[in-house]
Length: 530
Image 1 (cartoon, rainbow, N blue to C red):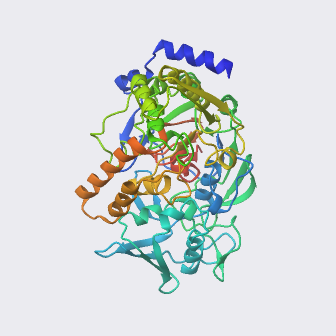
Image 2: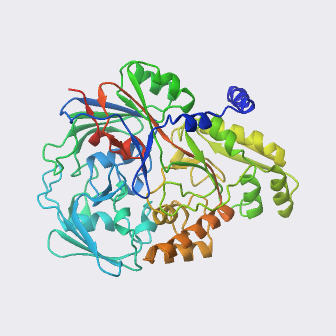
Image 3: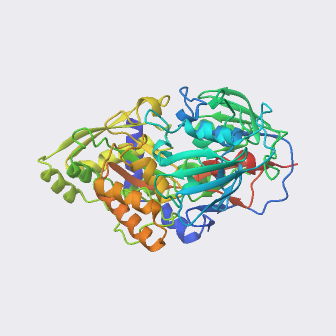
C-alpha cells in the first residue's frame, strides 16, 4: 500500500488531464448507437474467415465460480454462458434488441402479456431438441421466494409461463413491462435442456460453442458447435478464455504471443502498449461504472448525512484523470449513464466539497468519522489506488477513511454484500428499469447497499408499465435524483472498456459496449486472419 500511496499522490499533484486531451484530439473514435448503448468503431473489417484458435485473457474469475446460472457472478462465467448457451433475445453490436432463440415476440396494447415463438430445429449439444418446456424449466429456476438468483427481482413480476404447443411460450406479467424482452437477453436467463421440468446439467447448451473444459478461476476451453442454429457467427474453430488478474502479466501475455486478446487494459499504460507494432488498442464507450456501496442497514451508513458526507469527500475529476487517465466520464452517484435513453441531463453534477461534507457530519452529530473501505484490484485496474486517493481527499472533511486491501480470489462471495463498505463495479444495463430493479430495488438480491426508499420503489413500478415516453422520462429523472441524494453508493466514475488485440485478430466494424469484450460475444463476432 505504501508504494501505491506515493504513485497516487504524485499523479494527483500533477493534475494531468488526459481526458481533456483525448476529447480535444478526438482520439477515442467512438460512434453513437441506438438508444441505450454506445459502440466503438473498429477499422473496416474484411469478410469473415473460418477457422483458427482464439486465446483471450481477462481479469475476472474466481475459484468459487459456478456453472449454475443461479450463481453466475464473475465476468469469466458470464462470457462462458454467452458462448455456450443462448437466450431468448440479445443485444446486437449496434445496440438494437434482437430475437435469438426466439424467432419472434409480440405483445398487445397492454404489455403484461408477451408471446415468444421459438426457432424450430434447434438442438442442444447433447442432441436434445429445444422446446417450450426447456424455456419454462430454465426460467422457473429463478422464480420463487427462496430463489437466490441475481435476476429474481427482474422476473418475479412473471405471474405465469405457459406454452402453446412445442414452440410457443406465453408470459403473463403481474404488472405491465414495456422492456420485458430486453431482460431476457441476460446470460443468467440462458435456456438449458430440461427433463420432466428439471435442469439436469449446466455445461450443455445450444449456443455456438461447446464447453470442453472449465477450471474455476483459471480457464475455460471451447470448440465450435457444428450443429449451431446460428450461421452468422462463431468463425473460430476453437478458443480458450484465461483468467489473468494481474494487469502487467496480462499485457505481457499479449505482447509475447501467449494470447491474442486482453480485456481491462490499464488506462495509464494503454498508450505505451499501443506503440507495439503487433498490438492494437480498442477503446469502447460503455455503461460500466465504479461504485463504493455502503450497507445502509448498518451504522454509521444508516444515516444519510453520513452517506452524503462521504459522497462529497471524493474528488471525481482527480480520480478520472489519474486513475482512469481520462478513459471515461464523471459519475454522479446514480447508475444511469449518458448512453441510456432516459439519462437526466439536468441533474447537477456532484463535486468535491469538504466544507459541505463537514456540515453533513455535524447534522449526524459527528465532528469526525473513521470508516474502513474494502477493495481489490481484481475488480478493475486501479481499484485499490482509487481507495487510497479517496482516503486522502476525505481527510479535508474530517474523515479517516482506512483502505483495506482484501484477497482477489473470492471477492464476490466473501466481501461483496458482506463487508459494511466495499468497492464494486457494474457493467451497466441497457435499460433504466433493468439497472434500477437489479441494483437498487428493495427486494433485489443484488441491492448492494441494502437501500430501501419507498418513493423510489413506487416510481420503479409505475415507470415499468408506463407507455408514454414523456411520463417515463419524468419518473426516471426523479429516480436518478433520489438515488443520487439518498442511496448508499458512491458512484464516482463511468469507465470505458479498454481492450487490446494482436494483428492476427480481425475486429468487426461495430463493437458493443453493453458488456466488456464486445458484449461478451467477442468469441462469436471476431475472427482470425486467414
